[in-house]
Image (tube, rainbow, N blue to C red; front, side, top):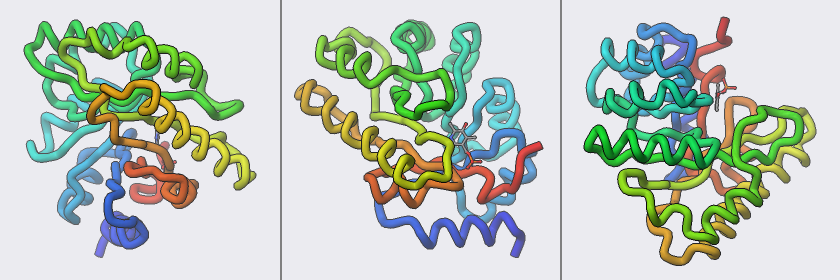
Length: 223
Ligand SMILES: *Cc1c(COP(=O)(O)O)cnc(C)c1O
């Protein structure tokens, strides 16, 4: 068995029923994706539009691609119009959300997205603040989306060895998802909680994640 196959099998054996695995293949070649595909993996994550489109063109059609990186506004049309992406996990501003919606309407498709929340202390500058998200949902900001379905919440924990801190970040994300649902009773299909990476996904699952995004532990280091 290849290392990728073995790593995938090891990770899958730790996932409870109901938790889906995104194999994050960014910066790894299409051959590595093909190896994971041959081991049964169908869900992959990419963080750059061009890289996703290149791989999607070369690899089997039944792969589901998730976009997980910061999405620049000038790349939205290409990504949406390609119809290659099954979930945009990293919608980090209302402006980006509105743009995805107008481009999806234009392309004649419905885009599935997650909103990305920023709870980690020192990490990425991207993502809605929890208060911004609560405000957006409480005022029904999703109701006038015409071609976009918000399927849930994505987030990251602080990048630290302090397990208590990581656990607290994941619990804050889980609570935020719950609070959003309480504040917007007519919000349907807001079910996905995407959190956890190679080094912290077990903690994320313990806090309620039903989608984990694992790269390094499957494909090795990125160079
Ligand atoms: C790269 C990336 C991952 C995967 O990280 P690993 O540490 O390699 O598992 C998960 N989520 C996002 C948003 C990423 O950019």
